[in-house]
Length: 232
Image 1: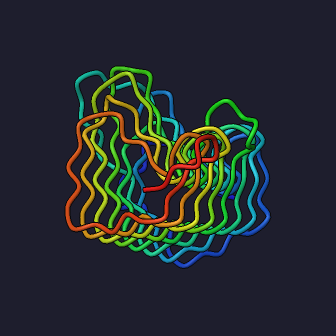
Image 2: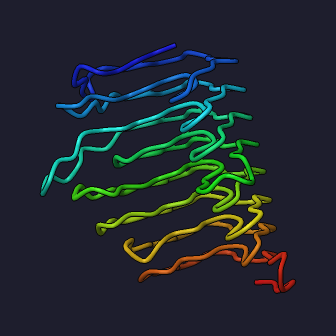
């Protein structure tokens, strides 16, 4: 439906669209990619429903050029809903190798193939370059998303990054292999505050944060493991 590929900035605004039943190999509804200049538009008040990609980013794919030593300006998503989008590989709703800023967004019933190598039923965040990759998640709801790894969010990188989650809920997300809600690899510094993580179920745990973290004023309850039936 939409392609951003000419270095669009936050002044390029997509506002108030509903995109349903999109289909592509990369980014079922929106694709952002450029071999030279990052694209960082603002997307707000949009609904993405039942879009499909065969590879990455069921609704949205952001694949940007490597920028050594340059902190990425994040892609901003505000008051958007991602509902029942899917992909076979990574990022049932969103795949990004670039930083994200998510505010008041809903992720409901998005999925990656449970047999896929990677995951991130809601968001698949990854970077294997020298560009850092981070996410700020504020006031968001992740419910009923599923994947092989990281039912709600799967974050992996070979460079340092940050995951900051505030005033958000993660309820009833599932993963067939690893963490049901959050699967965050050790390269990330993670902070979670004033949030609820409940009823998530994964192969190894309800949630997994492998790197340094700070969790404050959160409710963590009823999360479980398929393999050892443990709860937290």
